[in-house]
Amino acid sequence: MSRDGKGKYGWEEVPYWLRGYIQLAYIFNDPKMIAEARSGSMERSTASVPTVIWARPEVRRRFARFLGQHADAFCLETYYEHSHDARVLEVMTKYFKYHLTIPDHQLLTHYWQKMRGGDELYSIYWLYNRTGDPDLLKLAGKIHRVTADWEKPGDLPDWHNVNNAECFREPATYYLQTHRQSDLQASYADFTEVRKRYGQVPGGMFGGDEVCRPVFRSAPGGRDLRHGWNKCCRMNCSCNQRRPVLGGQLRERGVQHLSGGAHFRQRALRYLTAPNLVVSDAKNHAPGIKQRGAVPVDEPVQFALLPA
Image (cartoon, rainbow, N blue to C red; front, side, top):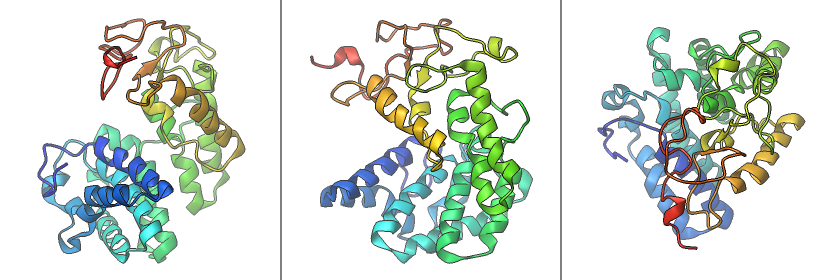
């Protein structure tokens, strides 16, 4: 984590970790965890509003432009809901006002953030519900324009497993502003399309490995017993839409997939878990799994290195 905004590049691991950590800190009402979460993200983002790290040129030039900041906003939202620290509203307003100054063709220009603009929409509406600033609705329209098109009939703009699971909610989120049924139904159509083509891994997740297999994209109903599911995919938030069918999927993943892909002491996760993969090692199982490298194991330590 770079406190002055001059790190190598802005990525997503730290803010995603903080997002979960601060929520657990408040659930457990643990003063030590709360203080640590605040020092890790809250104070870093709110201490000096006139020179917000989010808006510094050094950060803007990084490869993953805006991606880490999307997740950072979730941390700030949790912090505000428990502290009512007015600096959060001030710093988020400043950040989003800065977005309005950027031409459409220069906003969300890289692959990851262009796919995941729905994350920013969520935070824009969160802030609007607390400030009523009409400029935020203008920004929401702008973000929707420059985000990948998740309303393509019969197709998705990308077949990366995690992007599918995280981003299909974008039209449904935008529906909160437009009230167009077509926006809401587009998210359901995306949800249906993925499962029509790739079926389901036991427990509710679709079989997509790291990237859904191209060989099946033109063949609805295609199946492959080697399909696995990605840890990032099962931890995404798209199904948290307070709709019965999506809420059921979220519950299934929480019960089946999180436990099935984690070490019993919660000290490690598999990056990819396939129902027919009977080993959990650090070997390369491509092309049987569509991702090269030691994908069955993941940080912080390999399963084989953990004590019994």
